[in-house]
Length: 245
Image 1 (cartoon, rainbow, N blue to C red):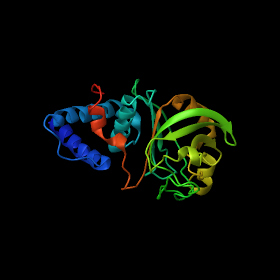
Image 2: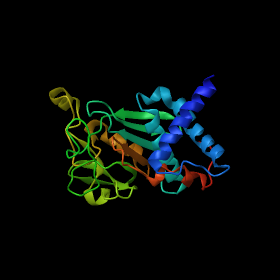
Image 3: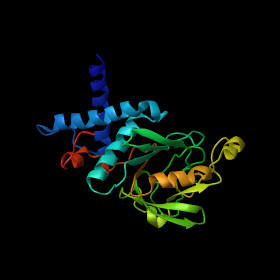
Image 4: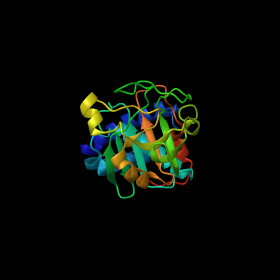
């Protein structure tokens, strides 16, 4: 009974992922079983980690993990760490998950700020345009560390053309900020806003950078129906040498 229920949920999720990836819904002969194995593997990964995930939606995890697998298979990601930021949640809630996929545990669940051009408490609009001060959706790879006006910071490379590919040009980085704090929440009911960076609280900034540096994957999601990514295409992984996650 449970196996049948899991299969129904899996098929629904696979359909959702296909739509987001802009993929043909009519698989070629022999492809269906491979895709079923792939998505069942991702689903079971979520089940094994579920007690640690504290409110991370299954569909968000599946998208993030599929992108992680594709970026790893392409030789771009070099770390077992996956960071997920769900900007469908308000800034008053913790919405950044840092996961160790190898050990299958949660390293940190914490607050994350969105860009002031995207909205105040909720991130409602997203942009890749310089000077928009909006958050950019999609997959990123963490790059080199540096010290700037916000102290210790980590550069990000956007991997989704048209959605976050201007991250370098826009100086979208990971850094700590005073406006990401319990005091700000108590005073306003929501966090302050960045200029597009996924800023975190100063007291966790060093921990975050230590964990995520080294070409790890960051996935930022939000309420945007038009977002598509090549990294959500299961064909990329199925055409490479892969094993069930």
